[in-house]
Image 1 (cartoon, helix red, strand yellow):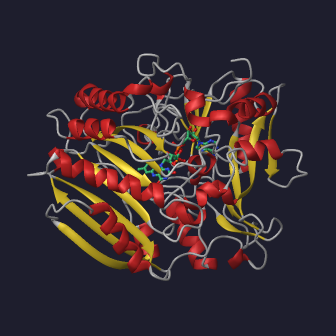
Image 2 (tube, rainbow, N blue to C red):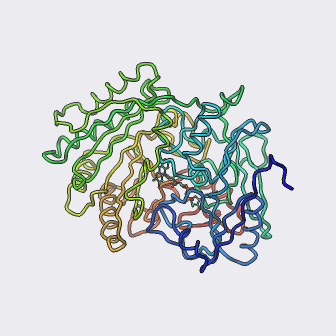
Image 3 (cartoon, rainbow, N blue to C red):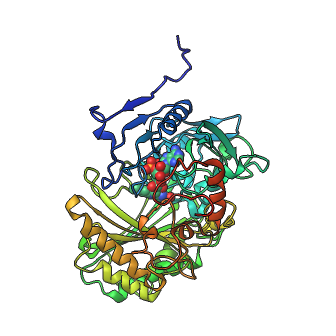
Length: 507
Ligand SMILES: Cc1cc2nc3c(=O)[nH]c(=O)nc-3n(C[C@H](O)[C@H](O)[C@H](O)COP(=O)(O)OP(=O)(O)OC[C@H]3O[C@@H](n4cnc5c(N)ncnc54)[C@H](O)[C@@H]3O)c2cc1C
């Protein structure tokens, strides 16, 4: 009989076409992508992952791994994928005294991670704002959110990973890799600090501990805020002029240029410009800050003054309120695009080192006020920089370490029949913004490539990227050759791949 302290065993569960559960497990968050694998294997342990990968490799079946299912592109639903590993049931979170670090399994959602770390130890990680995103794909791609300007990226706190890799002879095995300088597997850890999911193996566990952190567990990760002060401003599109709109957006960008150095007194403020299409009726600016930071209210007031300078447009929303941080961060549905029952979306992105230029601001205004954009089409400017920029570009695989914002271009819709129209609107908008650099955010004094957790296969399509700069340079910049070396060492058979995956050297 099993000892009472042992967790109940789960899986593996093998779900094949014809099984009543099959159809329900084919999609992730974006209903535009639906796979048809021969098998969905829901796994409950590292050993089960090793066995599943071994069997897939022996049978010559392409394998993909899904944790939280929030991938923007079809990396886990590609028709070539024959075995889909579903890691969502591997969701334990706890303190590992042996490693002096918090262990997080990949199926844990960010909401679970925030709740458990808060309740157990009063600590947190600077991860994403959508509580349903999975740790599995999120951490390995970098991970950032409302606390990143204060605490950096998630991977700046990544101590180690357990990864199921496949040797040249086809043997699958679990390997532990840490950031310890003398760890012979350190390169594998490094690749998981921003290299992106689905490239090197299957992550079965992450360990988190801030660099140089000492003491008891409650001091090994950043302290969790208790209360967030939130400020929301919204303007109606009716009567809005191009001059006022572009002034607001430029002001938002310039504020970030001036307030995004590591340790800046305003680095605690996270700002978001939600420029929704005119068909939505309004657009907004949101600021959040730990309410218990000294002078928090004044930082918000200065931000609002700076963003609205030179404009007198009437606001339809102008509120300030304080909410419990845990409530704010883990509210179900937060950050999810569109209607949960039908959502289809396409998202494109780019890092910004400074405000969009005047030409780009005019393009943004034109595209957000044309007749073809949907009510759920938008450009989000997301505040970044601060503590993120305290880390050097090669210390982790996240190469962009002097950006101050991310630009996220998105459109969300419900019906498959509308796919082409929505995707075409978004592609045209994006190409026009980056018209001076081949339709993509080539690193220069304004842009700095893009973020692999916001993957966009158009960046690898010569029809939409005419810059001559390959997608991997846009995502990884000078870190790409090192990622290729890791790929050659740890995935010599090329078992783990997708439309934007890291290729071995020479390709
Ligand atoms: C609504 C929404 C909000 C978001 N908000 C933010 C945000 O605030 N900040 C931010 O940084 N990002 C954000 N993202 C992007 C998010 O970080 C990525 O989509 C992330 O890759 C999702 O991970 P997942 O496990 O949920 O997705 P999945 O679809 O399961 O996986 C994504 C990719 O990672 C691979 N992968 C998954 N699990 C593993 C594993 N265990 N081992 C190896 N590879 C794996 C998959 O094969 C796939 O290629 C958001 C995405 C969405 C859809």
